[in-house]
Structure formats: C-alpha cells, structure tokens
Length: 311
Image (cartoon, rainbow, N blue to C red; front, side):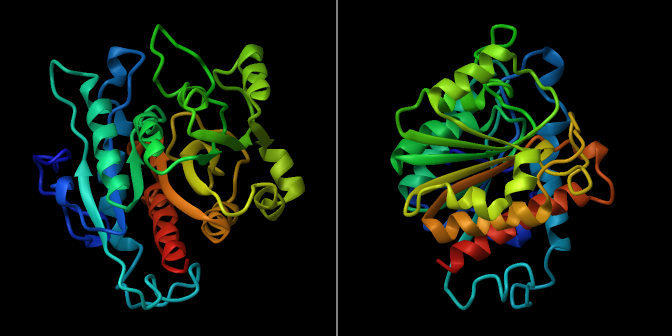
C-alpha cells in the first residue's frame, strides 16, 4: 500500500520528476514529499493557506529550468553533473477526516521508508510543525546535526495544549537522542519565545546565531563552526529568509538570511558531510508576488540536488 498519494486534482510533480507512490519498493537517490498539514493551534489553522504550499512550489517549478541539460550558474554546471541520479516526487502525505493527527504518523512512516531505502528526503510544508515526524525518522540515519534557518526560535513546549505545532519543532527535536547538535540561524525580532525558551535552548547547547551576528560573521564562519564529516538535516522556515526573497510568509520580519547565504549553507553542508534531508516550510502562497517565494523554495531544492550530485 502506498503511504503517500497525490491530491485528487491533476498532480504536477516538482520539475516533472517521476511520480512514485509505492514507497515499499522505492528506488531513488532523492525523494521530494509534500507535508501540507501541521498540528494546528486553532480550527482555522487545520487547512490554512500554508497547506497549499507544496502544490504552489511544484506548479512554479517549471519556471526554474528549461531543461536538465541547461547550464545553471548557481550550481556551476548542469544539475546532475553527468551522474545518473534518480529523483522522484512521492506526492503529499494526506490528512483523513476523523483522524486529524494521523498525517504525522503517516509522515513518519513515509520518511522512514524513504530514508531506509537510502534516499535523501526533501520535504515541502506546510507549517513548521510538519518536520517533527521527519525528525523522528532521522534515527534511521542518525546521529544528525540539525541546522535551522528561521526568524524565530521554535522552542515552545506547548501552545494551547498542542506540543507538536509550528512553535515547537526545535524543542521536540532536542528531545530526540539522535539529534546531537542544533545550529539555529537568522533569529531576529519577536516570536513566541519567552525568556524561559531562550534559556532552555542555551542550556541544551543550541548554537543560536542571530541575523545580525550572521551578517557580522558571514556564512563561511558559521559553516566552519559545524564539525566536518557529519550527517546534516536542514530545515528552512521561509520567514527566516530575507523577505525581499521570500515575501509570502505569515510572520514577515525585516532582515534575514540572504539568498546567497542560504545557497552557501546548502552547498557547504553537502561538502562537509552528508545532507540526509531538507525541508522548506511556512510559505503562504496567497501572499506571494509573481511566485517569487515559491521559486526561491524551488531554487533551494534545485541547489540541494545539484550539491548532492557533486558529492
């Protein structure tokens, strides 16, 4: 039985990569998966606009590339660099009426099958709660260093009694024994974090690099502080990126990680060791301008594929 299925509307895959729904016999180097549904804090958030983001990124993806044989100046050559790399799109993890929490269980099952098959997992959210089940599945490839781009700290233990919502993913990750190191980049302004969450993150040992510190140090310095030869997972909250690059977010904040620095981080992690997975979350498509946010997310994915092809 397939764990993930495409939506009822005609399904468009990312960059027209083959669609694979049966994960039990998966043969791929990289699998792209949509995770539309988080663990909502209110009824209005069950199907908010962020649930439309995986579809929006896929539909914008033809604007990224006129053909996989074209030279990409961000990547420094063609996408696959002459390698026989198999990239597939496995569709979206569904939410079933009457089982609102079941999508997290199915997401974890899907992630475990993908990682267990030896593929790298690239997910498109959804709010920032959706990587939590993927974090659990990383024990298949752990230990892992979690690298986090965001304007916000995401260390809340609970909000409205919900412990796996979009304000809590890094707190939940810190409780998983296979997550050995956490590096958080781009924090600025105010979010849901209170003094106790900041203190909890520092006590755990999370390395918190504000947007201003990043500008002073540079991404090369941040990468140099991450030990070589590890396994890395990168989670990108769109509001962690400069809003001139990714404006379609629910909580925009001036400043942020530049496009150049985000690409440098993706490439740098692939050079340092193994990027086992990545996600891009918190995109609100109805607020987008000329699809630039969806296109930027697509370029992050494209550059990750290109960097993996060169390692």
